Every structure is written in C-alpha cells, then in structure tokens.
Length: 603
Image 1 (cartoon, one colour):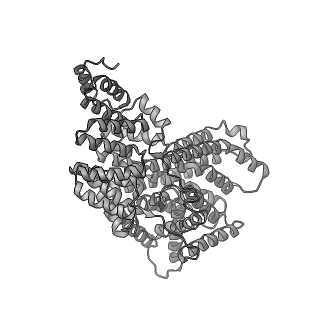
Image 2 (spheres, one colour):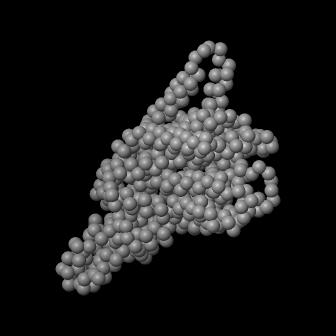
Image 3 (spheres, helix red, strand yellow):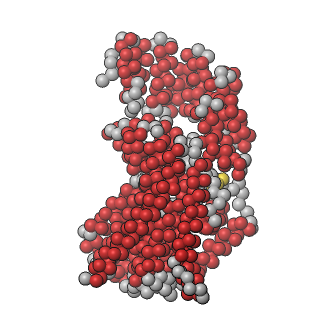
C-alpha cells in the first residue's frame, strides 16, 4: 500500500513539474506571436503554397505523393493545412501552433528525463542518489530544453514545424518504448512483443515521426541503446529478441531513407563526393559536434545560417582540435562502460541523433544549423542538469554555515533560467521578418550569397524593387553565374519598368540554364509588357512543357492566347487551369470569361 502511494506521489510530482516547465516555456515564447513570415521557405511552405488551402482528397494525394520543396513530410503539410483552415495567412496563429508544440515537447522531455534517470537509479548508479534529486534533474533538463536560445530557430521559424512535429512523435515513441520495457519481463518472446499495445503504439508514433521529418530515422538505434541501458546481463537470447523486435523499425527507417534521398535528388539538393570530398565532410562533421556542445554551454553568437567552409585544411587547428575531442570523449565513454553505462549512453544518443544531419550525406550549403540540435540536445542538457545538482550537493556537504541549503540552488537555477529566457526572447527578434533575419546574418558574414538572395526576395515582396535590385546585385558579385539570381533581378527590373535591363538580364539567365521554367516564364512576362504576345506565348508554352502541372504556367499561357484572340486555345487552357488550380478562387471569374468566349463551361 505504501509503495502504491509512493508511486502515485512520484507520478503526480513529475507530471506537475512537467506541466510547470511547459507553461514557463509557453509564456517565454509568447513574444514570437508578434513575428511575421520570413522569406526563407515560408513562401514555399505557406503564403505561396496553394496546396494547403483546401483540406480535401486532392490535397491529401499531393501531400502523400509529391516531393514538394525537395521533401516528403505529409504530416507537416497536414499541420500547415489545418492552420490555414483556422488562421488563413495570419502568422499569429501559425506561430501559436509552433509555440504550443514546443511547450508540449518540453513537457515530454521532462517526463522522459525522469523515466531515463529512474532507470539509472535502479541500476545502482552513483550518479543520482534519491528521488528528490531525480525530480530536480528532470525539471532542470526540461527547462533547459524549453528555454535554451539554441531552439529558437525550430520554434520561431514557422517552416520548421516539421522539426517540432517530428520531436513530438519521437519523444512519444521513446516514452511508449520505456513503458513497454517496464511492463515486459526480460524473457518476453518476440512474438509477444508484436502483440503488446505499447510496442505497437511505439511503432505507429515512429512512423508518424518519419512522416513529419526524416531526421527521426535514428530512433531504432536509440531503442537499441535503451535496450542496452536496461540490460543487466548480456544474455544472448535477450539480445536476439531485442534485435528482432527492431526489424519493423529498421524497415520503416530504410523506406524513409530511400524516399528522402529521392526527394532531395528531385530538387538537386544532394552534393556529390566530387564537389565536397568525404574527408572535408568528416572534418566539418567533427567540428559541428563540438560546436553544438559549445553553444549549449555558451549560447551566444547563434546564427540562422552557418555557411559551409570554402576549403577545409586537414591541419587547421579548428578541425584538428574538434576531431581530437571527439576521439577523446568516445574513448573515455567506451572505457567507462564497465563501471558506468550512463556516459556512453549519453554520448551515444548525442552522436546517433545528430548523425543524419552532420553532412556525411551532404544536403544544402550549410555547415550546421541550430535546428539540428532540437532532439540531440536532450543528453547534453541532462548531463548539465546532473552537474548542477552534483554541484549543489557538494556545496551543501562542505558548507560550514548553517543556512537553508535549498536557497542557493533555487536562486542559481532561477537566475540561469532567467538568463536563458532573456537570450531566447532576444533571439526571437531576429526572426521577426525576412529583412531582420538576413540583415542579422550579413552583419556577421557579408560573404554569404544566400543572405543577399533571400534579403532581395524579402524586399521584393515588400514592393521595394530598387532596394531589391541593389541587394541581388551584391549576391551576383559573389556568384555571377547563378541563373536563379539573374531571374530574380530580371523580375525586379520588370517591376521597375526597366524592360531593356530586364531583357538583357533574363537572357543571361537563359544562357546559363536554357531549360529553366522560371526564367522562361519571366521572359514571357517581359514580352507581355512589350505587347509582343506571339513571343510571350512561345515562352509560356516552353515553360509549361517543363512544368505541365504548374497552374501559373497554364494561367499565363491562357492569358497570352486571350491576347492573341485565339479563343479555341484560350478556352482549352482556361479549363485546364481550373482543373489544376486547387484553390478554386478564380473559378467564378473564369467561368464568366469562358461564357464570354462562347466556350463550353468546365465540368
């Protein structure tokens, strides 16, 4: 009876503490509600994405079958579609969803820390000696996770909803697996595991995590790490059962990996070994592993974009020291396994969860990103919390003054969390809009082409075309053979009425990439402005051949046929546009237009 009461008290205590951590996190992030969209993926994901504007079978088919924006994460699209259905394009509501998800994840992190630390206590570890210490460490871990400025990028950037969703299902899956391990005896047969509700729910939430963001691919390895942490003896049958139980997880992970590679290839986002050699990737990965840990301890100078180094020298102190530290930490944890599994488990979790984004398989042009630490930070934050509690205990044991030993730890933790909260709110201001974001990046590094490129897009969206031209030209100075930049510059010249400059610029883009549908479409718009409808029609037709399912291409082609007074072709393309345009916003006007052209109405 006493054990039941004690268990209930522990259950209530940890969940109350978890709710407290989640609530504090929610309050700290409230200023992000004042932020807008940023000109970095938010356009593709939200305000220019017509697909998310209708929750219907067409949208579901698109979300689950298309590699839009070089990604496959249907649950992320579904969450954005739900937000649009409620808030439309009011960024306030989209930010609110991100803040709620992060607060819930903070709650889950607190509970998960308590469960994992409880296993360490049960194994007789000297790391934690009593239940109060366990609760304190779990709370500090949750608050570190919720309030650390390193996580602002995942929360304040609406497009990173996928990161938050993935973490939510990932953490749920881990908690369900811990429950499965707790309730199942070590001799559980493999066939019984497949009939266990917690095991099945663990598998389902893992699938949902993969459908949110493929970074969840690391979970099967983490589950094996949990098995190892729970194992008291190296029983061959137990090891065999654990491996067999993970087969469904590894199958799902493999399928996700294949889909992800295909999606990245579709957007030409993967870099070959010829472009970025394997040695460079390994050296940069080692540096990232240490840099992330440094930023967790010293959260200053956080950047939205860390450019990949133009060259990596094997004898550079920056990379040599990082590689040496990785080797030393790995060696230490391996040597400590016999007496203490906890160090190896923490380091293993950190390495495994970061592995998909360390750049061994090179995607994009960044060397690292704050958002990549969202899940991997659990282990370092837990160790930091353990270190704080150890420090408090040591001071209490060696203090000669008769004072209340609970006061210094409370003041210290409160001050630390207050500092992190202040830094987090300061970091949120960077993500206020596209201009503040990219101006901040340029202040730190004025040699990043992407920063000028995205700033130019932001200025264009605000109607500041002259400023956009100046900014895009700075990007072109860094990369004069970028067809996308030239296309953006041509569009700005077109908006300013500089048709000659627009024509010269777009032809430069097409010389570099003759089959660029965006450039062909821009050329068509320039011809339209010059009232050269025959050449405009030819350009729009070429663009549509490259992107036959793009509603904008069909729309422009239909308009050009209108200008050419070709009613038959205009009717055909207006009907096609109505079929492709999932929003249906212009259907009434188009139907009237078809009637004016004496065309048969669309079905």
